[in-house]
Length: 143
Image 1 (cartoon, rainbow, N blue to C red):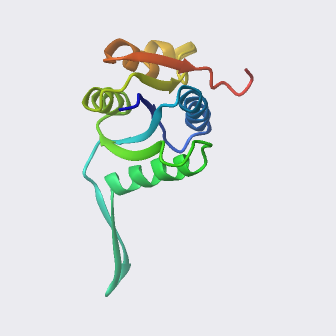
Image 2 (tube, rainbow, N blue to C red; image 1 turned 90 degrees about the vertical axis):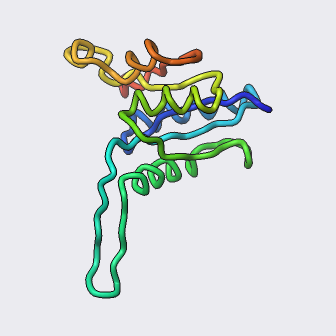
């Protein structure tokens, strides 16, 4: 079984930068990349009217985000998977990594400076609770 690298994503540019870094690492190491998007509630929304209705859940939306990001990454076919994971972003990554025996979690450094550092960041929470190594990507635009 190959090593598993986990990266958390949302719709932000900084998350996409972290995912690109994770893809490069996975490719270089021959590891499987798992792109994860967290969701914290079971909200369900319905769109349309009459018989033309569609139901979308928070889990569906999170999986859609993970799939879209994974489709943009340059990883060999078969070495990338995408999933929605229940929980806050940090807890979703930690729990997923633990359940799937990940060897590395990749996160961006968003909110690790200034007031965000005081309030907490996903990277900080993951670094303190991860069951494996954590790689924090510098995702600042000016970097």
